[in-house]
Structure formats: structure tokens, C-alpha cells
Length: 196
Image (tube, rainbow, N blue to C red; front, top):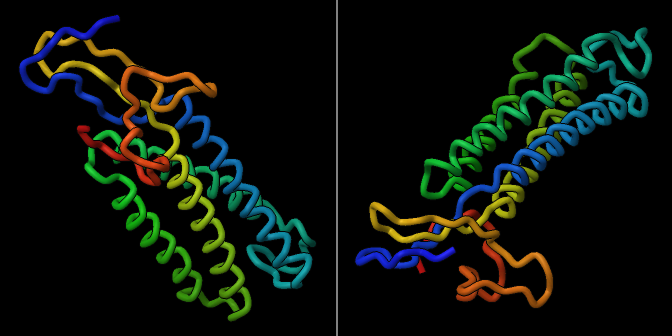
């Protein structure tokens, strides 16, 4: 498909999120967050003998609170992915804003257990599990936002025809008219919005 010539903007290239890759990665991140929560609880309760989320008489798996905690981690990962998606669509540097938001949210959930009346070892264990979940969600979604992108090319005029092409070739030797990454010797680490 051809793009009509435009007096302003010519062949405009913008980097946009790829919905399929992004949400598949978000679902995988949610699964990882749930597993981090589960493994963290098992390590605390079974290996270290710290009764986190339930009395020690409940065994290594605890009680219903364990499954609620795992489900909460999954939901938090999906909410964070939705926030990142919105940031990728509407902010100039979504990775920067997302990093601050997820960092401060993680800090809040790490500090919160220390405001309860539980014994100090339970507070510390809960804080460590919360930190592991926050770091997993933050790092996985940050990496996802850098990779789940595509280049959108099209003229800048009012009647311009836009065409979507993948941001990178899918096979060795496959190229496009003009690769938006030609000016770099490596792929960017953050989603970028530039005009070459």
C-alpha cells in the first residue's frame, strides 16, 4: 500500500503498543505474580516456619487467605498492566511514569505490614513477599512495554493513509523501506516516540 505525499510530516513514523503482544505478556506477568506470592508464602510458612497470613496450625498452605493473597497479586498485576497500557497510549515517557508509580506503590505495600499488630517476623516476612511481588510486576511490565511495540507509518496530512508494520523484521534478512531502529546499534530499552 502506498502513502500519499504530505507537505508536512512526510513519512511519519510513530511507535505504538502492539495490543496482542502486550496483553499476552500482561497475562503472563499476572501468572508470575501469583506464583511469586504462592512461593513466598510457602517459603515463609514451610521452610522458615513463620506463620504468615494464617496461624501455624493451618500447615504450610495456610487457609483461604493464601489463595486470596495469590488472587490479589494476579489482580494487582492486571491493574498495573492496564495502567501501563494507558500510559503508553497517552504519555511522552510511559516507562518513567510507570516506574515511579509502581515503585511508590511497592514501597507502600512493603511498609504497610509494619503498621499492624502482628509479631515482627510476620511483618518482615509479609514485607519481603510484597517486595518480591512488586519487583516482579514492575520489571516484567517494564520489559514488556519496551518489546510489545510496533511502528505506525503514514503521512501527516488530513487525508493520509496509515499502514501498520511490525517494529522489527520477523525473520533474518527481512527488511522494510526504512527501519525506525536504523539510527541505533541496539533496540531501545523504553518505548519511544520519535520522528526520524
